[in-house]
Image 1: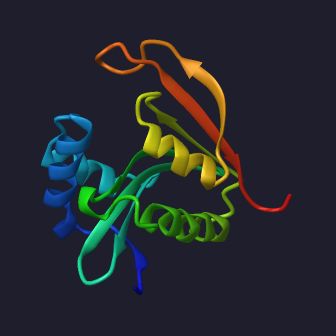
Image 2: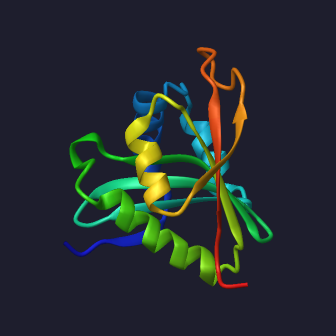
Length: 147
């Protein structure tokens, strides 16, 4: 299946809000995502085929990136899309000269942790009581590029 990555556009905002609220219980708003799309430090990339398969929300500051959220639609999970999305994303970040990337993940999200480890992320710290339900966050890190 041919997939591409593109920057999010205004027409994607309602979909992003829907999935942020459904998957992360962030209770985000259209105006918040509009602000993020217009923020030069925030990059939202959509994984698309005929429709949207998922997206990633990144903060990129100089040569560092932080994944704020990553979504692969539920019905498409465990089919290799996440791994392929990361490969696309790593190439894009290389073009932008990003050297390292981090993310947080819930220890209870075993499927996501398995994907991140498969993509070369390593756990480097625990953030105690990070999530609004008191669950810790595992901080994961990956060095990008060859230098």
